[in-house]
Image (cartoon, rainbow, N blue to C red; front, side):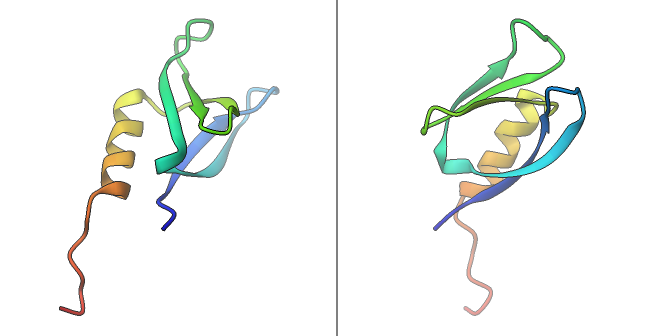
Length: 74
């Protein structure tokens, strides 16, 4: 089952756009060396992009999306 999280991707024009990515397909992420105010993300597919979310925020979103939730129906 896909575990979607919402991030703010930084486009080439500097404008942030909301993107939804599968938390389980994020290969790695961290602070960008070139633009310290952005985080860099690499997906398992090889796609790389910058987001305005801090690594702590990304880590929290991944944890919330991937941890088992109790079933409301019992």
